Length: 265
Image (cartoon, rainbow, N blue to C red):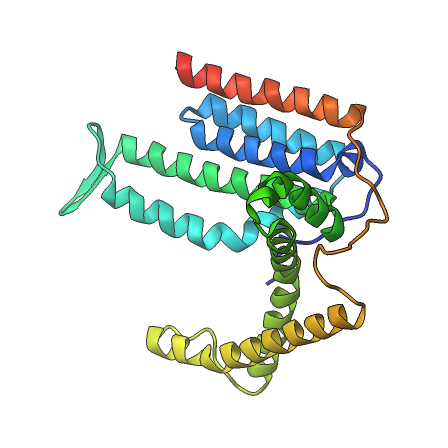
């Protein structure tokens, strides 16, 4: 299974050229706005907003499906679970001990839309921002905390590496699963216990591979003289441009529209 979160897609669009700090803060504002949405009108506005951003960034629509595909199972499971747990006033279906309310159906749909929109927004950040830009941007935003000796650079570096390792581990998992299937391992067994046991030979090689990759990365960083933020210079100096101003204005308008909808509706 291919996981696109953490993958960078090169481009020369305004979204790609925007400062990493602007994109990171915009993503946070977008996520907070999505969490505030309670109506389908709001979800529609958020969907149009994120789809328009994908079009401006000239990202093929297949990347949207790649970003949401890994979470589809979790979304469906959560919807089914809340369908029977959440209660309401209007009964739509009743059979023996199973009761489904109209409010429960709408609630489950809203949960699914919220999760999918959040994933699409987070994926958009990594699609259009390189690992080094994201690290420098987060470090710059956290730099005021250095007064209290907060390890801003280390935190930013760990977050960036973690994001970039997601697609790498996805490919590694896919390779190990195919290798185990070639050896006769049955991953499609209907017996839950057997299915769980079949994944044990997958988790151990994946853990060993992750440990080896982390060790190789640490060795490579040491060989290149990496010593954290101490004495570190940057090849590119981040500067805010008119693109960042326009992006900030658009994000303020979007967040304002969501808050207005929440107050009015």
